[in-house]
Amino acid sequence: MDVLYFAWVRERIGHPKERVETDAATVADLVAELSAREERYAMAFSDLSALRVAVDQDLADFDAPLDGVREVAFFPPMTGG
Image 1 (cartoon, one colour):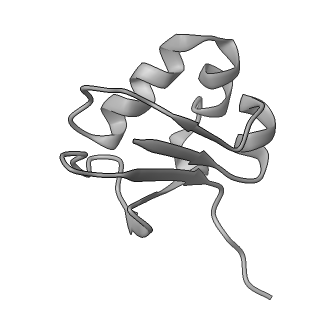
Image 2 (cartoon, rainbow, N blue to C red; image 1 turned 120 degrees about the vertical axis):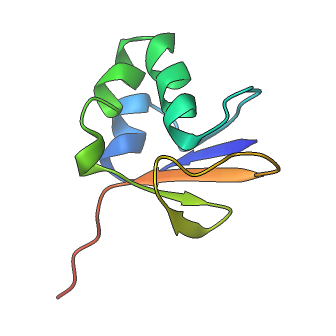
């Protein structure tokens, strides 16, 4: 699946997008896999309350299933104004 990173998440990880092969069942499982890779991922995912996630371009929770998913995106909460 494609994993996309936006705003400060992209800055901490160091790239905007990557292709990931995973057996993760949920978004939370994917986050755990990514966080275990190296420190920059661990930093980016250290506070999940500061992150939002979209699964195949629909907002989702971290317990969302990944079966059949093609794209997961991580980004900070948006503010209006």
